[in-house]
Length: 161
Image (cartoon, rainbow, N blue to C red; front, side):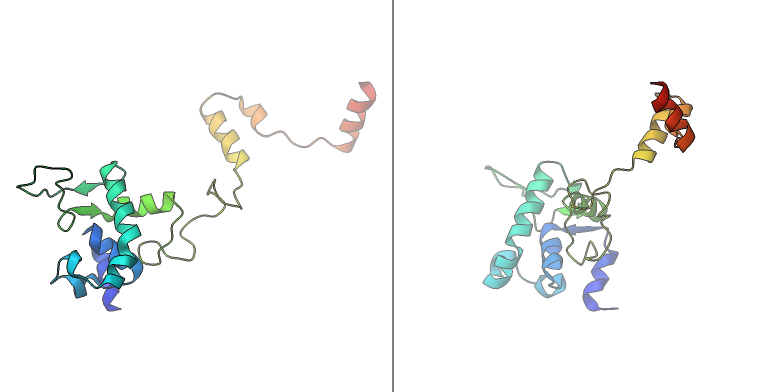
């Protein structure tokens, strides 16, 4: 098992740990320093992800276990180095955005390209939709699946009309 893959066992991680993993860094290499002490390259690499994760958490799109600073009288008193985020919820949030990072969401096929309404290959399942309408009692079962007309039936229909 690769050293970074061990992080896949976690149920919750901090926003900084998540951002580091998305970019490809091993968070254990940064545990001894506060984020403001990290190299500028690392801070620049993770910045968009930290902002997206924090904003999603603040707007209740992610399930977090919030840790607050005790003596802060202004603005956001969330300690983002200690606040943890549920990984299952994070993965769902990332899938909704069709974001494949390669660590939390595999880069090859976890997102169904046919079921993604924003994708080029989206194809709604009309048979499934009809079946759901039948099951809900909104459409009689006889209308859910009509067999195609035979040639003789279609000629008779067009000739009599």
